[in-house]
Image (cartoon, rainbow, N blue to C red; front, side, top):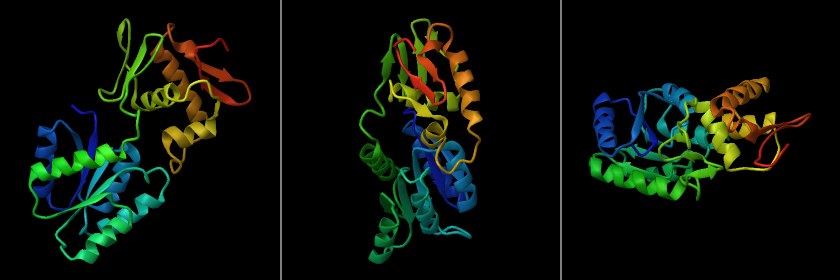
Length: 230
């Protein structure tokens, strides 16, 4: 698998199924939603890598959802491809103006969809995000979504994975609990700061005695990832 997850938002089950098959064949993970409310819930909880968003949805339209997602800090960076039966030029422009990264007019071929999706992901993936990070034999592989050591793979939860990925790509700097909440959980996710402490404990436990010392507590401030002695 590519390790990338795509959210399909369309109220027509047959279209969602057709797209899901195409994504599966191209080795992408996928999620499905039939309306804007269900989509927004999945986006906040699962943080997909890209959203395929139908223009015409029951209730809140796709273009309204796109506008909302681009305004919210936690979701503003997720690329969006609009799926639309509208062929008028002004509608395409409106979709791009609210922040969509591309649009595809129905009907479309699965091959075209996957090609456009890959192009958008290439453009919107920051350099280094897909590059494995290694520290003293501890390796985080963003493509395979795995953390391994010289002893084998570690069993690590999704939040702990994101926390470790942030730490390993931002070494030697102290972060407050509030900063970690913004960077790892997202600015619009309302959880208490002590939640960070719980996940730090879980992360240290997952890393084991060989690597738990890399996550250092800085009294009165927060945490840092460092290979140096605290």
